Amino acid sequence: MGLPKLSSMPTHNHYDVVIVGGAMFGSAVAWFLVDNPDFDGSVLVIERDPTYQFSATAHTNSCMRQQFSGEINVRVSQFAAEFVKNFREFMGGDERVPTLSIHNFGYMYLADNDAFAEILKQNQKLQVACGAGTKIMSVDEIKHDYPFYYLDDIILGSHNLVDEGYFDGNTLFDWWKRCAREKGVEYINNEVVAMNKNISGKVVESVTLSSGEAIACGKVVNASGTRAVLTSRMAGIEIPVEPRKRYTFIFEAQYPLDHDLPLTIDPSGVHFRTDGTYYMAGCPPDNDLAVDYDDFVEDFSLWEDKVWPAIAHRVPQFEAIKLVNSWVGHYDFNTFDQNAILGPHPEVENFIFVNGFSGHGFQQSPAMGRGTAEWITYGEYRSLDLTPFHYDRIIENQPFREKAVI
Image (cartoon, rainbow, N blue to C red; front, side):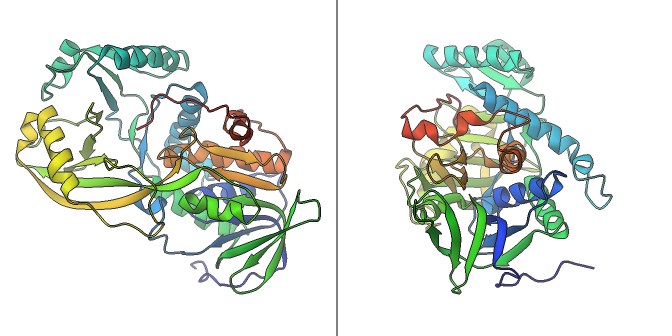
């Protein structure tokens, strides 16, 4: 028997946790909460568009990597790999849940200058210390393993074939959402239009829905993706998150490569990888500014003028390719430091952030969902210490620098 159709009306007027946004992170937090035997509260997830048509979740490329410059980002991705490879076990051994794997073609960062080459070397040392399989490769080593690259303008590469590549993130999302509902989380199709704080302004006492109801809450979680600032402003909080366009192109090659193409981060800013029998490429626009929340208009000149030339330069075998599909998605881009914003607000104490993932969201969702659920349940993290992502750093103007942002 399937789950009932979503209602627009909540069944109660009070919930211990109200989650604003039911896409990847809203559903991750919801599932990890109700899967925790120490949490016995009620959870309401409010989603404005249950088709998720324009969400960042719907436009993901579902990539995973260990190659970060910050240790906590490496650890977060390592838990994601563990979670994906043991997905059914994490979901309680439910035989309906599929087994998943990681397509380990790895990321290949290519350096064309000494400064970036040095950054890759330093990053690799940290990654290896965390147990990652990252290797610095000379040009000759890259040529040996991947003879299709043009490398005359490259100094070295950084590559990892362990728990790095593609995974089926949408399956995680679907099962988190389904199992959360089966365990009692209530999802409704509605929209939060206001938040009501107590006299001191330190607690959000209730949220007001577009249909007019005021729903009292113990804690409120901002899982609103690109619309995070619209949600936070209802509580009088500014958050440096805005929607930025990111382009994805699917192409086929007249002369396909004879083995997997790593997710190649080219010095041009274009990245591309194997995608089944096709190939996938992506990049930001040259003029990378905030856009309207509903602006998904494509700039088709980007393919002709930037992406295709970069691909054909790096892989001469790709001079003969044909574009078969393309789309625009949005990053929930953290303009402060391109890292997640997590945890409680220091003044509005029951307002919890799960925002600003800047393109890292799917691979970070298991650890961030688990950590947020721990914070709500215990008032502390009991797995990974995620305090480096807390909002305090923004107030204190202490950015968390991550050198490996794509």
